[in-house]
Image 1 (tube, rainbow, N blue to C red):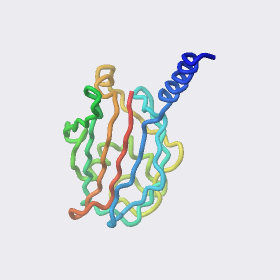
Image 2: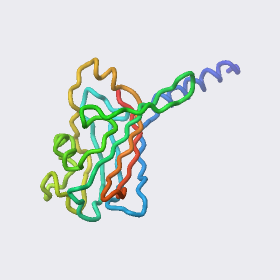
Image 3: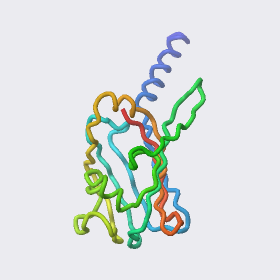
Length: 182
């Protein structure tokens, strides 16, 4: 086999590996003041298919009851490549619940009940107050709302998300998630 043939064979193998590469990443960024411990958080499929539900595997220990005054601070960034330079485009808070917002955790749970309820243990009532215990499970199906083809086109892409749970101005849980949606 000539050098050019070896090069093309290697290029095909590398290209195949890139196509199959997974983008999803989860990182715990919580400091010393910790109210929860995420032992596992995985999503399937990767990338997320915006036309279908996604499956979540999660093991989350809530170490103490979460105060009802807890606030959820979300920051979303769409990842773009401009002339080969990777940039993060901040997504503003839209409609008071989508994008980079700071809202009461209890209000968030009421707005996204269909998506968040599967994460609650069967012996705990859904919503606030959130009691200490084990949350999550394996192969939990999370519904993705139908958004239509134009919105899907706009939403498709790679994102970095920061989620912070804040109690009395102290971050008590912090998670970073990188995900791709198509």
